[in-house]
Amino acid sequence: MRLLVMAAVGVTGYLLAVTWIHGSLPAGCGSGSGCAAVLSSRWASVLGIPVSAPALAVDLSLLLLLCLPPGRSDRSRAWLFGLRLLLAATVAWSAVWFLGVQLALVGKLCVWCVTAHGIGLLVALLVACSTPIRWMSNKAISTASNLWFEPAGRLTGMTVLGVSMLAMFSVGLLAVAQTLIEPPVVVGRLPAGQNADTGHGPERRLAVLNGKLAVSPHQEPVLGSPDAPHVVLVMYDYCCPHCRAMHAHLIEAQIRHPGKIALLLLPTPLDKSCNPYVEETEPRFRHACELARHALAVWEANPAKFPEYDKWLFESEFPRSPDEARIKAVELVTGTALDRALAKPGIAAMIRRNVEAYNSSGAERIPVLLSPGLQGIVGRVNDEQELLGILEKELQLSQPKP
Image 1 (tube, rainbow, N blue to C red):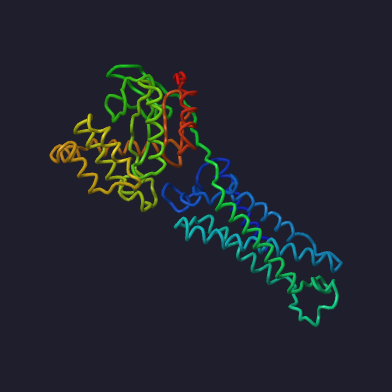
Image 2: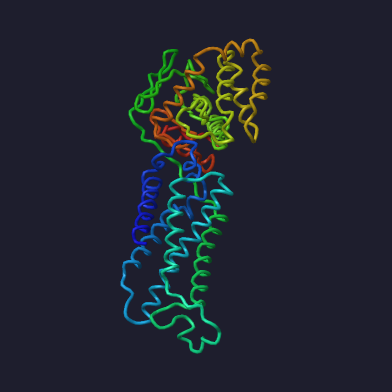
């Protein structure tokens, strides 16, 4: 039992260190994996704290109790056995809750989490089997003392029932807190690094991610003027709901600061068919590559039509289908021009470059906002005001008049 609990402590402690302290994914878990889906969901934390933190505390407490000697008096032995059983039952009910969440609500399993839960269930079974219990009859209950334990610290059925209900109640409180309280959004940030902007004109070049990604605003899909004082590079996916919300916030930032911000769009599909770093394509991203190719093809065929097409792709609540995307693209640039653009190798090369840049950035989710002078923004923000506050402060944008 001690060895198993030590293994659980190792797995839980590793998850806590990797996800909370380092803000990354555990080994063997990439974008689109079950681990990524589970650990990025609301069920991975409670009241803003990763659930691995209280799990680690329970495991360590159980390990300590398993290392303590039983004691000489019946009362001390009963307390020790009862506390061990309480913590083991808490571990078991927690495993049941979180396995149910992964299967029913997330729809994916985290291998590391399942390993920890499996160990926990086995430990709980062993603790229960090694606890001295007597299922007393009503006739045997004659005093207040043997209501809860008998000689040698043997627990009664009443004690076991009470311990199990207390453990269930504790896990129930956690489940209610996770269900009713929306976890706060903590915006991910990337180091500012050594970035550069060569200035205005057709030869303007922007370098971000310590020079790993260099682009020209005059040769990329841009919303706004490529010579705007500040160009924000946006890595996104047309199937991503957080990207949809961020896109709307960025458009509002442009309206709030007219002529000062341009958005250089870098489609980065989370679809395995064109992104080799995605281990498993989530159903909602299954058409991401096709939508990205159609968007870039519209830009290639007629850059003036791209803003309208980009807006159309984002304005629906759910991702557009490939058939819908083609019909709209043909409406804007004609079928011949679209097919000619889709056949160009440059579109696949742009997506490949964006995917490589996203992978090298170290970000674990999208959207990603990059710009010289800006500490990269990863994932969604709480609201428009939070994004505006970051952009205005770090890009030194003057506050517009009300």
